[in-house]
Image (cartoon, rainbow, N blue to C red; front, side):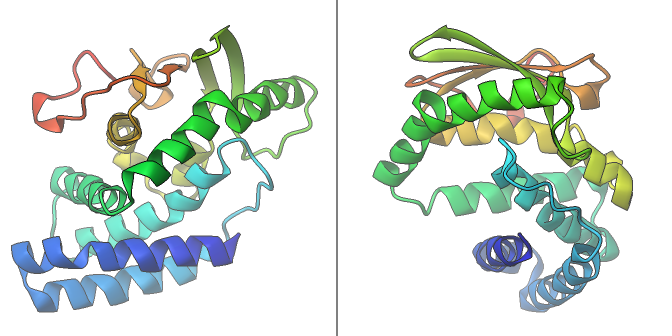
Length: 222
């Protein structure tokens, strides 16, 4: 798990270089890279290994987000701007992935393996067989292209509480729209745990369309 997190961190921190250098200068980027790497390495020894979770990929990103955020705050960037920069890092990364690969990943996730894992994860959660830090969900099959997931416990929020990064949410949650936009799937949600709702009520359809456009705000789409 630690190896995967470090690989994600290295690749995506490199993808952040162009934008950060353009906006804040080369020295800012170098200090950001070194400080965030330090924060990540210091954090990893205390990150619980939740095993083969249905959302294991999401889980691996969380420590990277926390390390980047802490480094940006240390450099005097406000919370709102730091969240936007983390959005930008993710967008810069996903835009470099060829469309056929994105579509292959999305097809497997929304039509194949992910759905089977989600159904099993719901059962494991009810049986108390999931790691305490794992997600607790309910999966609903709608049709061959559409499904819904209600999330009642979120591992990323648990990690945020453990390491003191709850203030990053629900900003981090909004990136579900970013990824759905580039994966070419439809995504809808009216509330999240981080917004104070009883669950994150996520609805997915593939293929489809999803607008990212963060400049429009997230009043109606949580």
